Image (tube, rainbow, N blue to C red; front, side):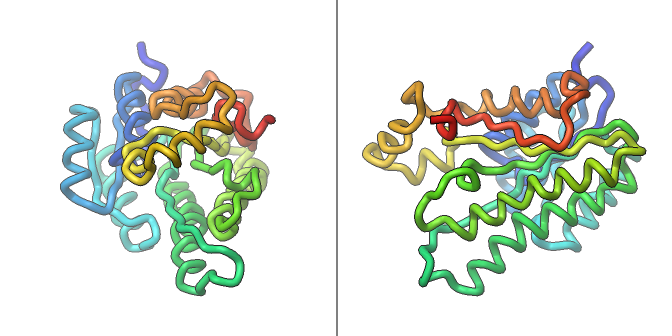
Amino acid sequence: MGKLEGRVAVITGATSGMALAGAKVFAAEGAHVFITGRRQDALDAAVAEIGPNATGVRADSADLDDLDRLFATVGREKGSIDVLWTNAGAGEQGALGEITPEQFDATFGLNARGTLFAVQKALPLFNDGGSILMTGSNAALRGYPGWSVYAASKALLQAYARVWVAELRDRRIRANVLTPGQVATPMMTAVLDEESKAQFESVIPRREMGRPEEIASVALFLASDDSSYVNGMELVADGGTTAI
């Protein structure tokens, strides 16, 4: 029997990279997985890759109407949720003095507002004893120049988790943050030249970026009963980058 046998998981922003790898692992461990993405072609391809235990719902997590439609679909098709992984997020570089209101609003609208309302809208469907996990970023743990807006939008996830632990204690719903470091996702590979890749890897003790599957295994831990005594925590999976 799989670690998520018979459970229902929802993963936002899961058409590629870490979350797609996680969706495949969740499905292999017995869960039915609902994934979201903004592009229908990418969503269809991801569902085909995950297999029959997957349902794709086209949605932008910054759009509250899309989130309503997502959870209406989950409720209609499965009736409840056991795991919610809010992975949808984005950000762009902008140094202090050059940041625009539009950049700030877009980043916080997806990473902060979208995460909060995804959790809030999922709650009526949540089974007691379920698990919420949010994708953080080690940009919130280090002072990377030019990334203050993105870092701030990810740093607040830990505050969400701490408060939600108190608010959801009677329902025994756990809330944790999964914070990856540099991971060789298709998006990362597409934007990095060899020099940039070498710079990224130079700060990782093993001198090699993480693989999506390595983050997926951590997500499975947080989603399953293996982490039943882990609550309100930020679990950093960055190969030791922020430790030294």
